[in-house]
Image 1 (cartoon, rainbow, N blue to C red):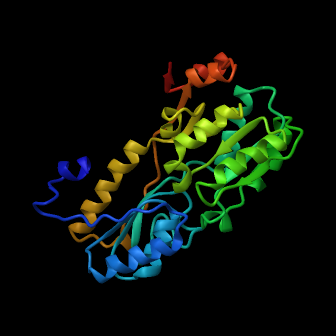
Image 2: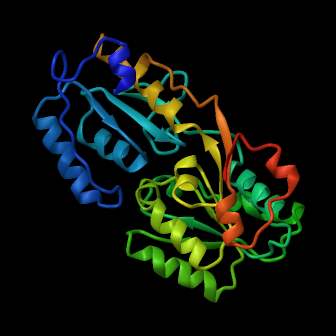
Length: 283
């Protein structure tokens, strides 16, 4: 909203926002909201992660859609390519690097050298998981990092599933956790941080919001920059740009953030080789 104000768009003066909000796992509610907004004949749909973006595209092929925070928009069926999205969809992607989840595992192993049984928390309702199987990246990097046990997959579809997932991790003697991007996890980041601490699981996350909520560390795109970039897209479309001809931008600023307070609570000493690469340290 600040980015839009900087471009001359003042809410209540020259544009109106119709806000709808529900957690991304509630697909029926998402579809209901999108259908309602289409009936209202809005000029643009601004959506968050892949579940919201897929629901928006399902609801309309004519109203422009701007997404924020979709890591794999091609695989999700939202666009044809980053350079030429096609159709009525454009936006700012969260896509970082090839093998991103492997990079998270590598950082976690460097931070916790004794790591042998990591787990990966996913939301199977996220359409990305139908197209991108992160486990393919884990086998090779696990051998490289000398991680003896397979990477366990923990699933959570609803907020109520999170406690069960962490209980499963304890039963399986998991000693480290990767949490990759999902709207459900983002909205429940405080719960996830508390559960990781309760179960004494060193964890790595995709954005600093998790670390601010008590998570141990993160590596990923700077969300503040991403959402400011979203204002650029909204401005372009409202001024007449064709979404299908507006290239998808990828994040250029990534950050490593470490929460030393959480590390202390876990009885963990962060290696100096990791600390010196951190962009931000929470004392």
